[in-house]
Length: 140
Length: 132
Image (cartoon, rainbow over all chains, first blue to last red; front, side, top):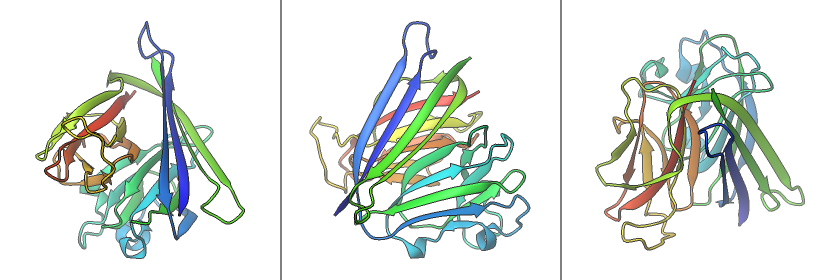
């Protein structure tokens, strides 16, 4: 059994006038089987997101740990992440859940366990930002 | 204006044969009220809202299932999970087994709710910051 060590650090020196924040979480996650790293251009002009902007198809994975990273250095190139909703073409109009902005030196990222029970789909507010996707499958 | 720096490092010496990996990503963003320090709350079976959907800005959210039951006992039973969803409870973001966590910038107007997935109620740990 392989292990993926995830360390999350949240820090701030100016949250309050009297305290600084330095939170570190260390977690050993069991992984096994497929590990995938890929980059996708997320077209803002896509009209059928399920057809063109599916990041991860549920049928191809078991439960996995997913890291999504908006590599764009343009602040306005926001990538929104949602889930497939039946046969609707543009599901993010009603199902946007995560919003990753671009930014100087690289944009925002998110990390979460994905049950692999529904396809993950993306859209972009403008431009064609590149989304980096890393998937580590859990043995469960 | 306050800011927060979030860094995630993923490393493994066993995921690949003889090829250790070490991936690190970070960002620093301005934040504004409302925000919290690290908090812990019981996740009822019917769900409890951490941030309401109405008027919510983009919110950086950390949620962890620490593996602590209502009675204070620890558990590693993967069935003792916490579902994290939008505030309506209809769109699941992730299901966290004991020890698992997420960090996501939640889209504006979504809110966040946590609920225990079984009759064994679990505590959820969380911290959030509103994007300025």
